[in-house]
Amino acid sequence: MNRLDTAFQNLQKKRQKAFVAYITAGDPDLPTTLKIMELLVEEGVDVIELGVPFSDPIGDGPVNQAALERGIRSNTSLSGVLKTVQRFRKNHQTPVIIFSYMNPVFQMGYASFAKKARLNGADGVLIVDGPFDMCTELRNHLREKNIHCIYLVAPTTREQRIHTIADHCGGFIYCVSSLGVTGIRKTVNHDLSKRIKQLKKISSKPVCIGFGISSPETAKEAAGYADGIIVGSALVKIIGESGASPDELLMKLRTFVRSLVQAIK
Image (cartoon, rainbow, N blue to C red; front, side, top):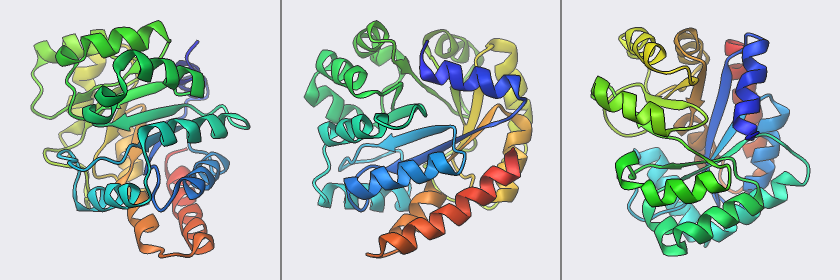
């Protein structure tokens, strides 16, 4: 069974919500990325999303864009990201999702990417600019390797399309909390409860809310609606502001992650 499925089943049995944490691989470098991944596991994160550096991140706001640029400057490639997952797998079984734009995956080749993702221990793939109806070939290669394709459902996504997305996605449905790009927001869209109820009627798959969750308060509110929360920009912001001090970075991250875990568990 895919590690994502096992994780969500175990959380459901314990009546707990999932904490999915996004970080940009290679920010500030891959050895530090591995240390951050290990810290996230220690503090109770259930799923890790690893962003692949890319030069034209149209779905990301300023915070994540800056992190992706730092990843490029540290010469982080898709192959390097997958090797970091392999190193992580030596000691940890926490599910890992490769969060990428299509271009790096296309350049590697769909079949080659699926094979390497499987060999290195990835459990899911989310292509930000790859809607399900344009990812058939990639999805088929990933399914052969028991890797889930995860898709976004936006506030503007129509019900008929949600049905199709739910049929094709694996792991969980990524519910985008609001229109726009990734970023830090002070409040959660209060129409989310209706949206989650709609998704639950359509699919039995877990639903996680992302985009804008940046504090224990917003995390707790979002977790009250869905099966899990996805936090990215708030973590990436701490990494970006911690300068060249790995110890300071890890200390600040640990404190913040701990506060989020306590808010939703």
